[in-house]
Each structure stands twice: as C-alpha cells, then as structure tokens.
Image (cartoon, rainbow, N blue to C red):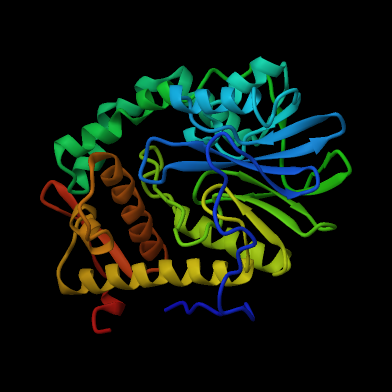
Length: 356
C-alpha cells in the first residue's frame, strides 16, 4: 500500500490575508499584482481572479463564469477600482466554466488575445461545437452500468449543454502556453507549469524571483479540487495524474512561495498542502478498499462512503465521477478489480488482497 511521505517542515499553512476582497473591490498582493473575486452560483461561491501589470496595461488570469451577476461585478470593477485599466492579455488556466466562462467576453471587450493550453482551448471548443456528444446513449449507459439511477445519469449527460450557457464564445485563435515555456508579463518572468487530474493541462505560473505561484485549482486551502473521470475515458486515471502533478510541485517549487489559488485565500505552505492532499486521497482509497473487501460495490454504492452528506443533483454528478476516479486508481494499483454482476459493474478486492 502506498504511503504518503511528508516533505514539509511546516505544521500549519500561513495566510497573509485574513479574508478575500469583497465583490467589486480589489486587494493589492504586491506592487503590480491585484486580487479580486467574481461570484459563482454554487456552494463554493467565488473564484479568484488575478491581474498582473504589463507595462501600461494588465494581464488577467481567469475571468469567472458567464452569469449576469458575474458580468455585473466586472462592470462595477471597471467603473470603480479598475477604471481606465486596459487588459492586454487574457489567461485561462483551464476549461472549467468558473475559470474560462468570461474569457471570450473579456477578449472581445479589450481586443485582447487568449493565452491557454492546447487541451483547455480544444476541450472547450469540442464541448461547444458538439454538445450532443455529451448526451449520447453510450455515455448514459456507462453511468447506469456503474449503478447510477436513470435520473442521475440524465443529469451527467446534459452537462455539455449547461456548459454552453456558462461559457462565452472563445476567440477563433489563441496563443498556446505549455510547460516549460517562459512567459514575461511586465517586469516579471514566469515559468509555465501544467498540472493534470483536476483538468487536463491546467496552467500554473511560477515567478522564482518574487516567489509567486499562480496555482489555479491544483492546490487550494481546506478543500480538495474535484478529480473526476470523464465519461468518454471511462477507465482513465485522473487521480494518478493529479498525484503526479502534486509531486511535480513538491519537487520543482520551493516551500516559501506565496501560493495564489483559484479559490479561497493565498497561503504559504505549498509542500504541506501537497502532503495533505495526497494523504486525503489515500484515506479515500483506504475507505473504498475496505468497503469492497466486505462485499462487491458499484460506484454508486461507494459514493456515500466518500460523501456521506446529502448531495444535490449538481454535487452528485461530481461526487460520482470523483468516486470512480478513486476506483480506477485502485484498479491501476491492482488492489481491486471491476467485474460484471448482472447488468452492472461492481468492484471487489483482488485475490492477492482478499486476506488483507
């Protein structure tokens, strides 16, 4: 069984800011570096946006979701603390609507180019150009086969159509960011990193000189980023990708950086947070392994093992695909196996682990 090796000398995270800026306000993190928040219509009710000075203009990192409320906050900012600001470039860290949703709107407003990874741009375009593929019968049947109810499977199947409502049309061209590019913004130089698991080729930016890490959703205080299996890649191992990305950060980035995450507060303690996240997922793998040792379990059976609280339909779709990510990780490690039982797939410990 893999063991989490602690690498951080810290025992707690350190927060230079007690709370985040109110909607419509900005917080100066450093000279030429601003932090603001845009509201989200979810339990996690905000996304962090960062602006980095670029000469006489500014580069914006992420934009928020396409809702009337989010646009209203941006309009308030542009007549308030950001009055007179010109946006020279728009960076989208990954394709989730809370980060890329208003990228097209922002690019059009300022005639600014979009910078992002190939996976982010093409992933968003595929969803936008072919939303019907997200509701194909084979996807619906896939979730049913893992024990999900027809109602739940229907919710997952229409996610692509909901995506279109939350993301503005992207520009017809983009500038690709990829590891290990160097991106210069004003007088700052950033090393481009990419992480996986939460989203394919998620972009992070590291400024070694000023010890700054724009971490997107790879590392966040208190909450673990969602790590989900995509229905079109049913045997994928996003949790394995996520854990490898954490190890990349631990190996490549020093512990004294200021982590600027996509949600919640900036913090010091990158190594500790990476350790905590890895340990968190190992505990979840242990819980699934134990449940499967007692009796064969479908993914739907295992959801309340990891998420015992009451879930609304939106939360259930993420909980289900994250549970499957842990199942697939254990299958890759040879600790459980997936077999067919009647018309559904169930998971059980493999013979070599049946006595442990």
